[in-house]
Figure (cartoon, rainbow, N blue to C red):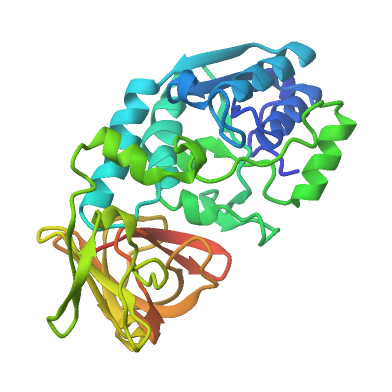
Length: 366
């Protein structure tokens, strides 16, 4: 595991661990306690337990809160459950719904890290007098030659979560620690077994935590009645080809499930939220090379006026691409890909790297 970059001895170091109830954060908490750190476990109750008690693969509710408490009880360190339902609904769930209604495809996990875990939970940790906040994310945090914290990809590319943490600020990063960044998932499970954790083989959480059975449309409809209003499916040449039952059921690049007949394959090219239109066309029309990002968080030196050569990820499963990023003007930075990309989707994050180092990122705009 990674060590803490603190000059104090473990017995004099108080660490708050964000415990979701999964094997990763539980292993971090148990390992730190075993090493002699003063561990305080905190679990956030983020949404109505009644909705998710029977949902397998969720986090931060029901069984997972119980599992986190059991780990704390087993090792004898304090554990608190904080009710953040109201904040989570406002900052994450409602933003998720509104983003879909704008014709975007949002990433609520990033918003959760940005507006709940690494903002409000971090404040709680400091109020408790903790020296650090540790999580079970697979990402590395190191200090450079000047003692400044940097964010890096995890050693295990299959588990790397740096894409979801791009919005972490410099100030937050100085206080955060990610002990699993140098480990693979199998190594974490092995350590969990050595620590005697009964949840060592617990499956990873899947999908969006507050979306039962993957039906995000029903969640959005509940939060925003009228979200499933129908509209036209329109070809890029202007022809109306059919009707849809809500633009929230479509994403850029989608081919299947359009419900229209065509001699040539058709793909979703654009979503016009204002006119409630789904715009379709040929696959070649999905290609684009230049786009803008907003709400950029930057962890490196200033971007030169002439641009900076970088690597970018345009969605969590994207393998990456080379690009040039230009400084933000009026709140928007411009990204130009070396080669045209396919289905660049508003609402997704563009995360910017220099090899393994996370330089920052922002939200792709329409």
